[in-house]
Image (cartoon, rainbow over all chains, first blue to last red; front, side, top):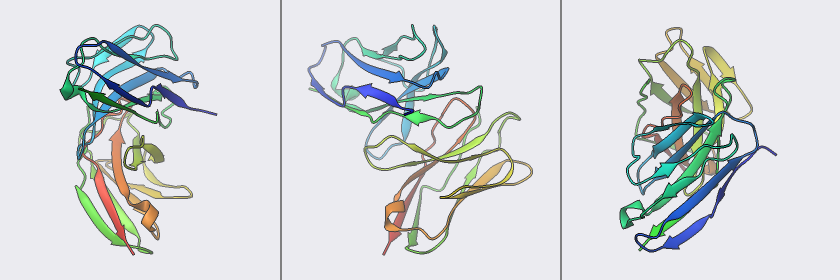
Length: 113
Length: 106
């Protein structure tokens, strides 16, 4: 089954404690992307990756890092989380070379206290 | 990047047809138009995709005029479960606009 898997689904952490949210896809997609969604707002892109070892900033990259060492994985790293990073995070993947639909993860609800 | 503009919200009643129009004036020649549906606290899910003219699947139709500067998502006979936010995306970089919040009333 084609899917994008995010872990964890829920996370409560304290300010300044480094954390990683994992994202994995099983469709051999070149393109992967991270978003945050806050109440009443749409999905804002944090970082995206066009392929292995190719990443670029989205609209709201401050406070986040990503890596793309393998095609299937695209972890989101918060080196020093702050309360303003409390949000709902989504990972997505798609095959831009085939113009097919994008698949989204189930979301990670992060709370930073 | 092609920016999209949609109405912020729409209301409808069960059984009616709903048409949501999206404007994308700067669409590139190679860009496809894709619509997604999102329920609260869930990831968006694919509804329909098209390049030109009309595309129809089991849940919706997508109308794209010849100049491709806009597109219209048509949902036939909506039900309460169609209450959601609908996003129009253009191109491969999955840039989301504000979306259209559709509320279906009984």
